[in-house]
Image (tube, rainbow, N blue to C red):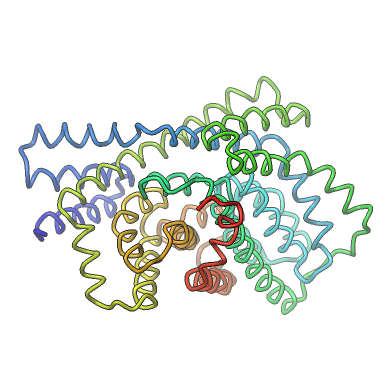
Length: 432
């Protein structure tokens, strides 16, 4: 491996990010500068453009704009209110009832919408003011909202897991979706334990216990929304339709649901479609630029050389996994999730395969690492959405955020070193 291309790639990317260039353009421009070292300018430009275009030439990627649209339809379709009502009857009587409601609602909303941003926006807007009115510190409410919103990226359907499937060379999307359930639930439970302890320490209010009749009533109200999970995942796992076809069905189902709930009207559709198109365009540009950087790295043999370097450090699986986790946590602090998955999967996946680690397990490990990064400055998008909605600052949120951050790290350690947490469901359904 020549060292010059690596230096140019890393330093130019850091430079463009530091001067405020959008991430997608930073990736594309640093890739272009790197390849110019090896070939003339005009072929270099054409090569980068070609790699960006061919990087999007995948049927599986069609699922992403459809899931984004279904998420927007759910955000505007009254889904969040019904999920919150159901969660309130289940955990409202426990210490920090509203915080626990936030976490469970975010897990359900994030799983259905497949978007941490949508979950953080919906839960923060609805539950934030209510928590503050009941005497909860707004910083604590923001910390709960920020961390719990990311769990929906592990619990399927998840756009990031689709991107990982593409980057890994075709790992089964159905297996990845099934693999995300137990790690997502475990992470949510750890967050609830920490949130409950914090709330009890600060004597936050709880609700009265709900009757079985109330629980059943709110479940029936939320059931049509929850049914989408069974339709999408059940259809994919049974082989009735692909992930892309499932995403289109999700759009149709959520549109019908929003109309039935009388939350979505014909006048709302242009705005919803425009928001979805904007979000999809940003995600697709990130994917295209990241695919060009992945090709440059492969062209310069960077993944192979880094794999050899890591394996030369140690052949101990525990040490290598700890190093990879540390590197991914570091990457997540500075890079958005989609490009990080596309760029670093080809680097680390050969290493973990050599150590006998299943690519499905590694996919969940990678996504959870990067979910933690979404909660941290300076690039944590969910962090900034959460504090923006709560009208507070990073400095004030850090104190209640740290215990929840460590709860997520503890969940990550368990998922890393106990493979069956991830692989049990895919094995039961014979998807691996």
